[in-house]
Length: 185
Image (cartoon, rainbow, N blue to C red; front, side, top):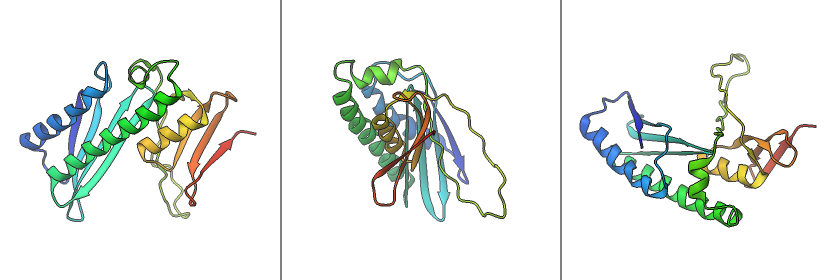
């Protein structure tokens, strides 16, 4: 698995780079073939805390984890643990659903389209300038799978192509912990 490792307000030393590569290589055991896309790792220091963010785009799934602590190496370890838990949790859930069609290992490797959720940005209403524009391919999926994808990447909403209606839909997490669905009328 290849990773693009960059630093924000910190120099990425060879020792840090080697440690990140070593720890993230543990994730390879969950896949039949190594992912072809490159993952992104951002190491930084924010308000005195060492921050590590990892995003791994896979076929049909985007894995994302973040951690902050007083020690960079502890943050890296925590992020890898979070990613492993995400993979195991969603592999189990999706395997129950797709038991007849194959395992999640197959779904991770053979899917053709990628789905990406965009995190909401809070802005002042005085300044309504678009500061980021993303384009992505919508993977057809049902509502349950969209909720799993949203939770896996840690966002509060997820845009997807609804397999039941063939329309673009949005699932979101409500303040009461339940989920909402926005569909086109």
